Amino acid sequence: MSRAFARIRANRRSTGSTARANFRANADGSRADRRPLTEPPGVRQPTSTPRSRSAAGSYHDVVTATLPTTPAPAPGRAARFVRRLPLPSEAVLRRLAVASLVTQAGIIVTGGAVRLTDSGLGCPDWPHCTAGSLAATPEMGMHGAIEFGNRLLTFVVGAVAFAMLVAVLRTFTSDRPRRDLLVLSAALLGFVPAQAVIGGITVWSDLNPWVVMCHFLVSTVLVGAATVLVRRTQRPLGAVPARVGLPWLERLGLLTLVVTAVAVYLGAVVTGSGPHAGDPDSKRTGLDVAVVTQVHADSVLLLIGISIGLYFTSRAVGSPGRAARAAAVLIAVELGQGLIGLMQYRLELPELLVGLHMLGAALMVMAATDAWYATRWLPSRRPG
Ligand code: HEM
Image 1 (cartoon, rainbow, N blue to C red):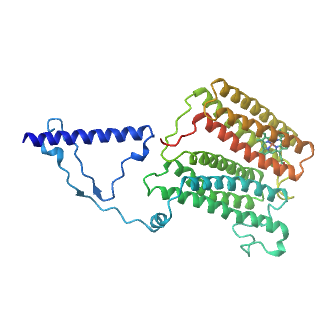
Image 2 (image 1 turned 120 degrees about the horizontal axis):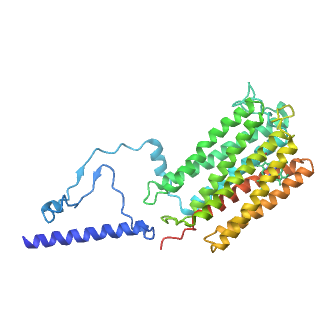
């Protein structure tokens, strides 16, 4: 009998220390490879949890029966499809995130090309190009081809976003699920049909400038989301990101991002008031272009000032992580974009420069999002 109790005590000690070791390993993220595997569905795992202190040492401690529970529902067709795919490596996830960022930024530029070539109503209807045809016809000329071509690019953006989400979901059937990527990749895919509908409303409203603005601004938010996604895919599997932990720096990073959003919004208002409507007969906001351009340029000056402040604050607190470098990149992009903005205004808005300014706006959103991100999170290291 006493030998049996000794065995029980030894069993409890070893079970407890293993659990504590696993807990420590997962809490600091450095030994995530030792994370216990999840239970197979439908089977409750053996347990040795004591019912109470007084019962310690009784045979309840070592009852290790395998109890059947309600069987898990059979996986649906979508789940079976995902499971059959190869498990994506870290590099594949990173490449897909970069592809998402490039396509989301790219469609801003191609959308700009539609507007700058006056092809906004090249397809006068939606979802069909015309009442009688889904696609543009040769009689609709170059404007029809440009507008319809841009509609087709939606499928490219959608295909990349779909591949990203499926790759993330595939990791859920492994022991290293990338939960940190799920919401962003689902949002990027979910907004593809949403943007298609807003694009349709743009056409139905005969390019109402406020609707065009909304279409453009949603795209800039998606570029910001894709930037965060890229940074997250750069975290090695299992690495728990560490906060920079400097509240004032974080606030300054957030302020920089908010003022960037204001400058981008005001830029879109300038566009809605200027001559490049997307169709010669479309309405404008009615605001004075010179006045809104001045307000837009003032917001840019404020942004440059805050970004310089962010750079020097980062340096003053010891340049944690990438904060100072990200702020320096942001300032460089701002200066380039500001120069293009000034030139296009002075030269009375030549299409090429306006197109470059749109590309610059997408790069600005990336750089400002990255600078904000760098003030919050330290770069992750591979679990040791
Ligand atoms: C960091 C700097 C800047 C950012 C982030 C920025 C952003 C933007 C954005 C997002 C648009 C709207 C694009 C569109 O809806 O198609 C825009 C338009 C415009 N921006 Fe800027 N801008 C910057 C600097 C400047 C500067 C310094 C000027 C000079 C005055 C300027 C002049 C304009 C003008 C005139 C437009 C209207 C172009 C058109 O009619 O399509 N921008 N800007």
